Length: 254
Image 1 (cartoon, rainbow, N blue to C red):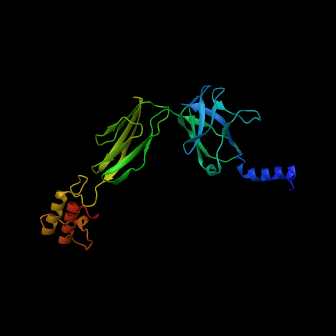
Image 2: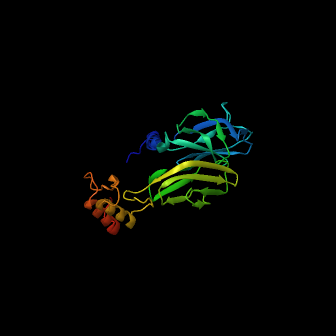
Image 3: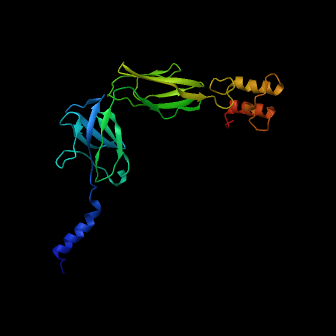
């Protein structure tokens, strides 16, 4: 049996592994400030894609990382094929920095990073029908250790990322205080509306709403076309029956 020449075997091996060649890293360098001051030596910069650490660098001198010279030590961000074009988030000693960019293999980019200590938050939803469940996310900078939330309806929380349910329609101001010092207030941040059929505004369809529609039908209450559930242009016995069935059986949405 003839043996394949060594050179041919090497070529086959190279061809078979060509697809496994990793992407070149993306390089970053620039200034780093914390509350407007140069970040001290020893500060750690971390890059993340989809919450996954993909590169880090420790500052060797205050206020800057890497450089544009050939032998400067830059922050190398390594990702896979699926990461190309995704946003890179940068963290300075664990605090989210303002600078962001997308992962582009083989590039060298100046990116100045800034961190400001303070309270910050966002919510996955800010308006909806009661009962409205809202997931809050802490976005405070400066690596806080304590959180104090007030949700505007009497509810409070000491969790970093709390979940709160608003049961009654209204407009609510949300406050977050971190480390018993920095506070962010968002007036009227959450708007909760009454569900259809909730005429007394308590956040649910109950016997009071059923009675109110019945009174509309017999003329003891002014007709409110919001109670025209069968959409025939008036409040009639069909609407009274519909809200009664909904209240008793919860068989279908109004």
